[in-house]
Image (cartoon, rainbow, N blue to C red; front, side):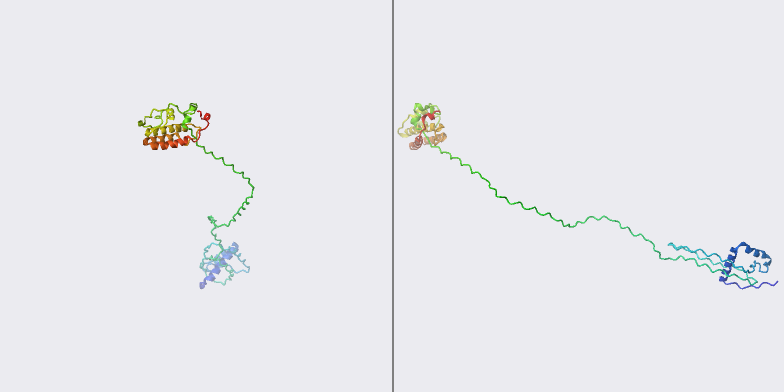
Length: 298
């Protein structure tokens, strides 16, 4: 038996199509492969490989179309390409009608980086509390209060001022003479005892020998020459003046203290003229006028 002639190797594309066709025939049913299994007697004719079945006129059902590709996702998925494996097909000695394989399935979509509208969350605007700004607010000032009404002319009755008090009558100076005070019927007007000595009231010098003389004796005295005579005249007028100043019903021009001071000064001079001058002044005051005798009684 002559050796079968060796065919040159097929191109890769033809080998791929042939392998795909064999796969399609296997899917048609197991029964199609039984003649092939029974052709084991012709192993030598096919070079040790099972011979392909004889061509039939029965059309082979095309394989179902591949499922539609899934929609592209936002994630780039790396899909491996189909590996092209070179399947070694033994050469056949007969002219085998090869059913053309169906067109190759469309290539799987390649995971390409497509620009997808990815919703990027924007930063949330958080309401940050802002301190209040001191703004100049134009406030309407309240209108000023109306001016007070002018004062009405009220006829105020002003009472007339009270009449001024009557002027205080100036007391008329008064004085009683030594003759008045030495009379017995007027002893009731005395403020001191009739036995009061001159030395107990006045400062009589010892040289005059008049220290122990009483007021009544001084009122009855006369005069005489020299300093002693002048002192006797002065003490007579001074005794009446002193009794006038002590009576509240007599408005005498001098107080009792003033009379004592002036008399002591004149006696201390030991001068007759000084003594007679003061005696004349006191005698004038003693003759200013004496009130009624009954009103002078104390």
